Structures are given as structure tokens and as C-alpha cells.
Length: 129
Image 1: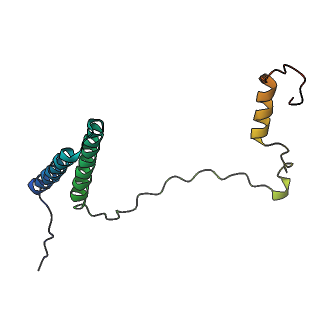
Image 2: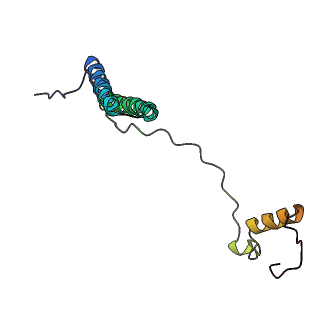
Image 3: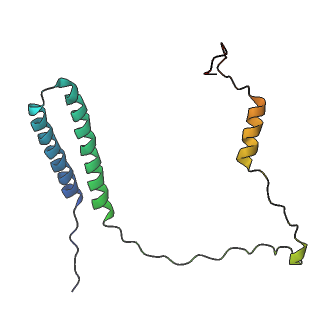
């Protein structure tokens, strides 16, 4: 006996999306009746519209892609092997000294040499300065 899976059809999906939109519109109407300030009504309208669109898109994607079953395909052909590298002695590799300055430090030194630092002028010789 072959089991058939319960899947939503295209018309059912459109009906579900319209039902979600209708619920959000009814919620928006009730919210606007009890809102007193007109400045925040525009914010809440925009918020409800964006939430409605996001929920509708999420519902569409969930029900559309639930039909897809992933399956591993066959392996492809192997690529061409590259040339072999140098075959030499390991002790002939040049050894580097420890780096004295980091790149950030050299960059900052170069920038401070190029730019003039503007400081507050000293107007008098008080004990503050």
C-alpha cells in the first residue's frame, strides 16, 4: 500500500495567504480603534503591513519547499592532478627572523609622520597647562 502525503495545493496555499492577510487587517482595524495619538498610527500601520508581508512570505516558502526532498546525487569525475612541487631538502628552507613591528604599527607611524596633529594652543602659563 502506497502512502500519499498530505500536501497543500496551489489554491489552498493562496487561500491560506489570504486568510493570514485578512487576520492582520482585522487586527489593524481593532488596533486603530483604540489608538488615540495620530502620530503613532502611521508607525503601527507600517509595522503591521511589514509583519503581514513577512509572515505571508515565510508561509509561502515553508509550504512551497516542503515538497522538495533532498537526495545525494552521483559523484562527478575527478579533476586533473596538478604538477608536483619542488622536491628538496627541508633544511634548505630560508628561516625568517621574528617580525619586529606589526603592520598596524608601521601604518600608524607612517600616518603620524605624514599628518600634522592639531593641538589646543596655550594662551597663558597657568597651573592648568
